[in-house]
Length: 459
Image (tube, rainbow, N blue to C red; front, side, top):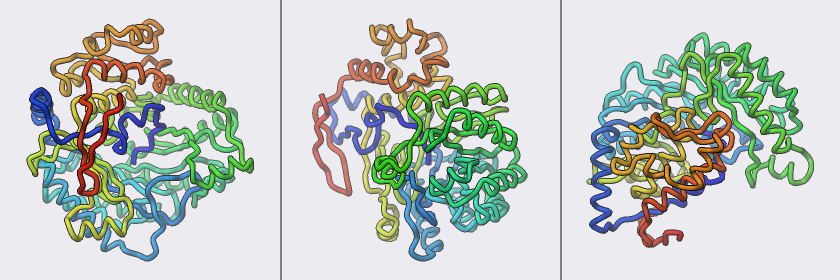
């Protein structure tokens, strides 16, 4: 699952708050048809696939992801249901090709390699899955996780994302991780041996008691052993987690905002010096070893989410759908299993995205990339309103352009090096301008758990 350091405006595009609709005016129908023609010709024929394995052996102290401690081994039934839901949603989407597959969680390295093989075989039976398609598996760097890497490769995995998080054993204990630094380094080395050039490491900054000096030292150590991709995530305190409680009660302290900002800037500089180019807010690569799967998210392409709590964005052409939907699968694994057994899928919530909502997603996700949004890409989603027309005349946007934090030129719209750090303060002005240019209707419908309900569009 993508673990983004989300922005202050994230509520604008999360499925729980997206405005939705089921009845259209004539103008909306024309707008939607235009959108569909663009999507059908370029985007609706293919999608990426995200598969969520919800189980972990333990819950990390900072984690509020959708994960569960299994009461018993149910690998076989999970495999069967993941296969069945994959079949159902692929048929519903009517895509002819899956461009990448990502196994996330949870801890997908707890799944048996035969599960990975079975799901990939299911995909290949339904649609085209190239032998060269990127297939990523998130790995917890424990001895058990490392021991399965070779079998995962035999099953079809060709890229690993290793959850190192820290090279400091005391910090790993505080975070509730079940590996140590030595095990993490061993796992990275084995993964690099099996998939050279296709191993990513996740590392976290802003940890309790962490200093700028210790962070820079840790990064330098990691750069000596890592492969060609690194993802940096700032630790965020999530309400309801053990770590949140410890900080609230004064048992632990975390670095100030100024210190974490300095850590981020320092990491950008150090990684750049070692040949890692930043291509997204949290992601760095050298030799163009980018995550193609995650790039599909940031470029607004279709993706299908399979498994408990997975999210997806695609046009359900198989049932006559004409616009992209934001879809969420049932969270709780046991309930999800029953729904898949009964209906073939566990889709709990589906929201039809109108034109503005789709453009909001393209904007927010696209500006996370250092390349930003090129004109031709924007035109796929907005053929009648270019980037200059949408944003070029706004006084607030002009101020951002004059400050040098935002760039709008013949290439497209993007943040500058300094502006990318300020993305959370840049986006609101752009979103307000976008909504002004493409007005919302006052009333929408959405479907939740099979029932239609009225929702008001905020003014």
